Image 1: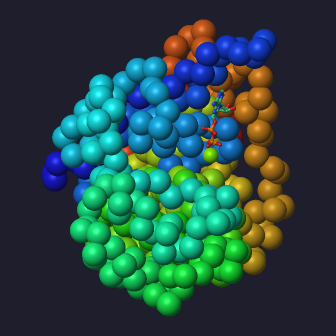
Image 2 (image 1 turned 180 degrees about the vertical axis):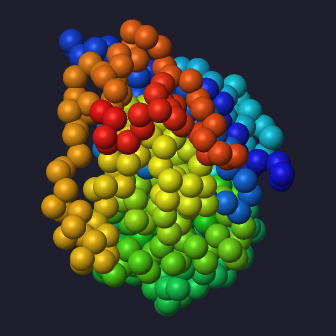
Length: 320
Ligand SMILES: Nc1ncnc2c1ncn2[C@@H]1O[C@H](COP(=O)(O)OP(=O)(O)O)[C@@H](O)[C@H]1O
Ligand SMILES: [Mg+2]
């Protein structure tokens, strides 16, 4: 197997108690690897810790424990100068293309900034590089003097992607990169991200709550629930033979394109979501993980794992 580009081991983020609120274990012992040129999809409901995980990997959020190695180098213990130099290898693309671009800067200024910060091209070549970046994301290089408000949501997201790629990163965290866009634009941005991956050999951590989009993008998929990965495998393994009841619930919520199948599915009783509330730590079997400990990681098949005490007995809705 190729050396992983990114290796995350037992990464945890604990937000301390604040103003009467109890501490939040936002991310708990996350472990995974991403190979060069590959995409790991990170799925889970809102609040499951996906953004915090992405930020902790990029060292934008301090981890309470664990290790993050990028290109063989440990990031969690790096000094700020070293980390600044590593930043050009790892970039972030955020959900909202409206708030992530400075309204008073031209597209040219927005795209020149990272080049100046990281000194990746000589001064007299910056303009050329900016035009090249615009072409890379299929925007007209003539847009260089325009301002973000003159663009559509999809065009702005292309600018955000171009800015992330300006410094030639190896790894990009895409946090809900298409969630704020209409369906047609979503498809265009997904296609763009895929072609950029092929062209530039990028690795992505692709965070989304939309499972249909993740299926299209990801080689491997990790399902996150309340800060933990409860299942991980190839996209086919996770989507076609989900082993964790929570994964099955998430998949049940995705509409199927076939109208007959979809109607049939809607006739079935809705999934029992009670276990998502209360003290059960999200266990469909009603186990209190906080008291009894996290279930072991079981291998379902090579490359496919699940964290459920009741696996392989009693998985699925019927077992609850
Ligand atoms: N800066 C913060 N301080 C305290 N709690 C936070 C902070 N950021 C996120 N959280 C909490 O951590 C949990 C995970 O949040 P987040 O990573 O944003 O989830 P997701 O991206 O999956 O929606 C939530 O319970 C959220 O309220
Ligand atoms: Mg988020």
